[in-house]
Length: 363
Ligand SMILES: Cc1ncc(COP(=O)(O)O)c(C=O)c1O
Image 1: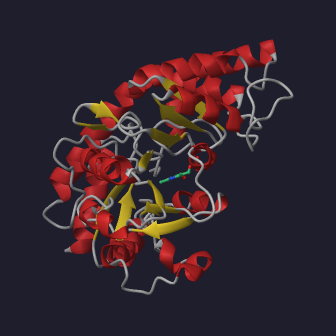
Image 2: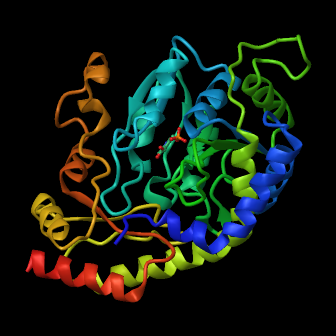
């Protein structure tokens, strides 16, 4: 059994993927070839927003968003301590300070009630993460940000395809970002990511920063980077994108079935009202997660722990001065979470095997 079965997806769509990649090899425009603009138009249409900008990785896309908003030394950016390190890393890379806000236990997302207390005169951006595949309450976050004159960036690396109130992830904040890392809901065959906005000026600036700070050759108004998405990877996504809505539906169905079968023995992930969940990870929690992982491994069932440590426990963030106990829900989650095999091609028989093994282990 695979934790995420990318080979199965390749087998299913091999002719389209190979065909799309071969066209790039034939035309030879490996940097910013025509597939980039074609994909960006389709991504924007899928999300339901004006502009999509493909980027070399999800991490680069977050950094570009912060640079475009002129976030830098002296500024603070609010995010969560229970996430992949990129969410905070990029804040440091632009010279600003990450300020952490704890999560709520049911959905592992930012506790919106705690954000106001973390806002200071130096706060410039709120950058929540839509963790594991569902979004925090962006209506409330956007309203709070508007009240304090702040910008919201959705880190939607794990939630591409999810919805809130019928609107797609990456369409609900001023700027948003996703990742096309292979294991993500929409993954390519290498690194990749995208930015989304409906703001024309921000779109232009983020496009410029992505390509060495300028849109015209040999003219560089901004400090930029080499953040372009590979044309070959765009070809992979052009082949995969038509199948993505079906995969999202399968993810929802499989996630809901796990929850139905497991909620009596452990804390299954909660889908918050108004949300759909794409289960980039199907993450449950139990105080016995290490034993559970061992027992499943013995039966050939792979599991993973995202994330065994909070960011304030990482040595790189020691200078921020957060003590153990500062974020009790994040800390508890990091000691209790475990993710089960999850992908759109997981069969009911495989799922039943996982469920039986989890039940036996936790009995
Ligand atoms: C929450 C979150 N933010 C940002 C990223 C960064 O994406 P990438 O790996 O494409 O740089 C990831 C993925 O790894 C992630 O899970």
